[in-house]
Length: 304
Image (cartoon, rainbow, N blue to C red; front, side, top):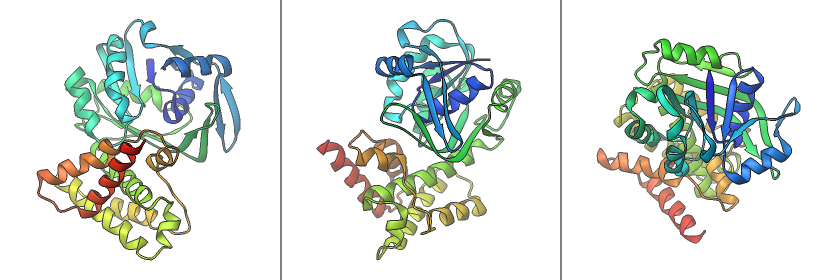
């Protein structure tokens, strides 16, 4: 299977590297600065097991040739419009596009551009970041990759995707209910991002502060009410596990949005929080805590 990895940051770099190491034909579509960095130093993975370096196949948008069987999109959501332009020449009649982005707005955006039949569901669970020299740093052994047809019908095309991905040295989950997985990932990451960005700290600091537990539970409840109104078929055991994970004061957690914020980077405010508020308004739901978070993030973006 010919695979194009759109992006070679922490997510794309890690999972693309594992696919390449497993013998898959993987090309990384990257911007000029990242292209030069990877050409000079290779793609470096720092994992709990040690350091690995590989020489990846690289492409710039201007040099893409031929169609790909699978395009995995791993950029930040605010870069999606440009990436759609970049990957368009690589999309052929049989191409499938698997976005691994935060939130859900990107699915409709990709479907409108390339067609509903081309977009499949995907998400990952990994604690990873880029180091100062562009190395991919996997902070814990967690490395799960979920994928499946958005309508739950995993036909022969999806079976081919599974055959390519399942042996790539990561924990793969071929799901026949990927939409619920996507809703639950959004519930987790948006709660985590909201409380960390609003309080400017990790969950341990928040939960051990006066009112911190109530803040986290309140944000969680508002988000759960929104996604349920939008079509999430609540799985009580799954949502209870998410809340339990977030509420453990012994385990300090932060979100990628919070880490970007404290470094002064652009953040996915509209895609992670703003879109929830739009959906809440559609159902006349009161979400005062989410509104406070959104105002906080908008002010941050104005001040950058």
